[in-house]
Image (cartoon, rainbow, N blue to C red; front, side, top):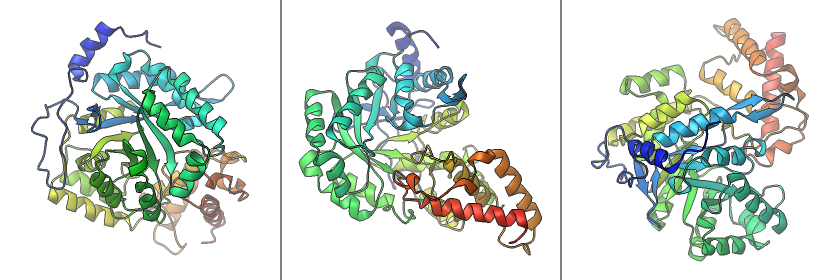
Length: 450
């Protein structure tokens, strides 16, 4: 682990990255944008200004739910702190100053690892976002204990952006935060300055969204975190509202948005080959993923776009995309809408690899099973009949890659349908149904019964 970085050294690095010297002017992207912000500097991170308090926030935020993992001596998965520190070092040196975590990320390990990595830098040089993830136990005592534990884990005495985690509507808000008096507690914490900005993250229908928006007059939300990408913009999953509607409603009220799932859990960086070719032909200098990040950043009212970057190459690519942001023009936005329509021909399971469904009491690796299936959908390796052309190739490809990706004792055939995994899924996936469907498909492949 690197030693603490003293203030002089930090200011030297930050001067290069442009984070302490006031940042850059906000990029006012919109459907009328015609390229780079005229105030942006080539090779420098784009910043947005929080209209509520003047925070200069990097448009690229670090989502801390996918820190790299290793096995410890007991074979348990733990966060690789040394690699995490290196990722944070690169991010900060290249202008990233917003870090988003939660008590439940990575089986409860994310906050502490994030705190260790950030503690080496001056506290005023970055913004911390974390959440009250009181899904299973929303008693007042447990909720307050979770809140205080976040301060301990993150080694800080204030939280810049604090969220009520994953609301779907007023009834859930009432149950988890209103009936137990927690919302009043958090409002007092905001007044005391221990919370600088108070908001919530949202997964749900338009009805649930409208209910929560009605509470703004009473609680004065400082920001809201929403799922936004060029597919969900007008083609959301069955449970979710259109991202376009969510963003427009926030802009009406002057509430800045933080964006999650700009890549739909990675699905927009691993699109079918002919769609990838289409994107790369239109912009040979950018990656497939860069289209999704530019789309999210182009929307007016967006303060920050989160990305869970496990690997250095992903971090470097995203930094490049936003240094500075080249906002999409009208033709490019129309091109991405056509791309989103093409994506509808690939019936992927809407798993975003958040791992809220884990651990499974029967040891099943739920996200790995669903993501493997989606990968095969995108690569046209799903056989529908033994009479199909290329059936043998697709059959072998699926079975071999499945056994390589998921250990035998963690595969789909071990699911008993207990539904414990469904409670916290923000996408509302009927996980047992999907797991059983995949298990049945695999069994038919093995027996050549399709």
